Length: 343
Image (tube, rainbow, N blue to C red):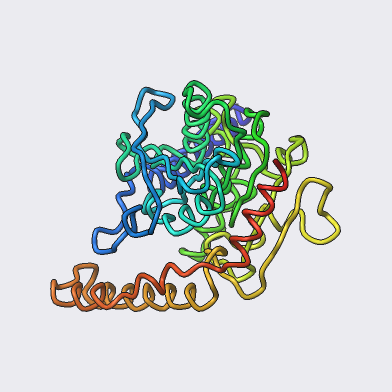
């Protein structure tokens, strides 16, 4: 009888912890990301010579993903098709400056909004692994499109997008090279770390439950450790990370697994001591971005999340978007050169 009660108690505890993990995942992924309506997002029209051709294609459940095929026609013939995958938040238009630079360097760039983001279908984000399924759909679209199928394929992504372009290597051996910025090692560990940093509660005990839920939801597509996938893939990979990153701290970073003596013949890792999460930006630009959003957050707290129209206009109207999106030319050159040499 005692054993039965113990087993019953353990089963109830299992259900409670699984429910808690599910609630946390729903809090992170159970919503859409539409970007910030008060911000200005650059489009192809903001860059001389950059053209954008609208594209759309279905993902795993038939939801339509929308984006653009970007190019600088004067750089044709193009080196390769570069699929650029965005991070969580404002969709692929958050990276138009980087897309323009890569297109100027001779790549034909396909970038799209992931499921549950901006212009694409989906009632919510679904999970980190959903982005991997979306990239697989983009690769199938490119392979089936006669205008694209003749190009070698390389990948680049930032944050969630950096994680995705690494994870997809377990399914897509035809990819020639990958550049991943601020990519994380494992989703369960990152979610526990972020939840812990915001609440002060150590959530590491929930890792097995996060993994279980993702396995149930995504089956064989559920994520593995990024470093394991990269070691098994016979593909050149460039990992870039900022040591001051507070979104994906170094303990959760894929780049940290390959730094220094841990680098391999195919995997190059660069950790920038002065950079934060957006490693592709100049130091001054990233500092300006962080300062700007710190001021906005402080004002939102002051007004309990409901900024008066005049405060909203004053805060967002004074943003220097050119300064906020200024690239680090050395980082962008490193990415372009690495992908070019891999071809």
